[in-house]
Length: 434
Image 1 (cartoon, rainbow, N blue to C red):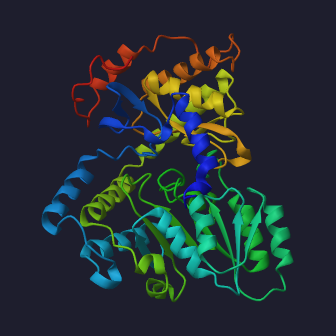
Image 2: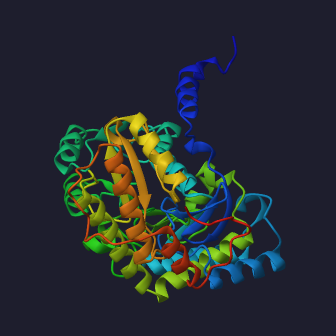
Image 3: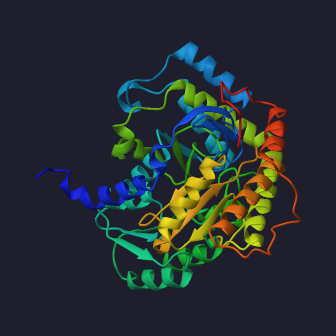
């Protein structure tokens, strides 16, 4: 017997997947050429699974600021801000984020996961109540386990169910914290935030929104769903990440509640984790500046998302409920999803394979994330490739076309990509995309 034997069922499922020739957990990029193109097994591959919403991973401003910071301040801080102090850049980024959101306070964390873990587990104690959406991200569920508050789940995006569950807690002592997300990471659907705010007000609860996938994507200035819905004053805490629109790594929470700063010495995941290195802080600050000064990126992202979503839906695929940058094709059979995913990778398109139990309703998804850096040719290539494979797998009708047929060949696509700015040649990638 071994301490690892408890994972035998999981290992068995993983082995069966690998035996089929597909292993999404061991994808290796030989090179990453641009925000939307990489090299997998010597083949040029379009990237549709990176969450690189604004296409800033190769942004010259961010790259140069990062290089400058690493030369001036070294590779890391080697400790937490509580133990080793804050660098000037940490405080500047927090001030910039607070200003962006129009809030008084901001804390920066080393990951977005850690931001949820710290805030949720610290804000609600054993005499309080945590109320979360049933389809919440794993970081929210893990935070609920780390904390000591009783946890109540309500049906996904259902304000009536939220109200019903809060009504049962009406006479219970303690604070109530509701946690929802701006854009949910699997199906790409948004929360009915105005209705949730009405419920929050009725029962005197606090509201936190995780804008990880909606920052830089929604709202007039990119502050997320709360901005788009006009309810920012009713949201007590906004949590977000740097690993999506800001193209780096890290997380944050902003708030205007008095006394917020005490969380720096109350939140254990903040206190006992090494702070972000100067290079990451610098590139994130630069990316935030670019996001604020170039709203056209968000406009192009929206147009790309609608083009891709409508193209797949028009071809006959079952997709999520909204045309957001996360576009999920919903498949019922895991084996079909795995084979479909492998075929796309083999033919030059990388996206995410999402499998139960990590997915809502225990369905299998082919999950794409669209970028502002994608060109129409990229979108059309992906739609036509997925449509062709879908028909070969017997998932789509033969006579339905997502748009008037055209030749979006790999050669044409690769030639178009070669003219794009802010990219570099791939190193020895052979014949290119096939």
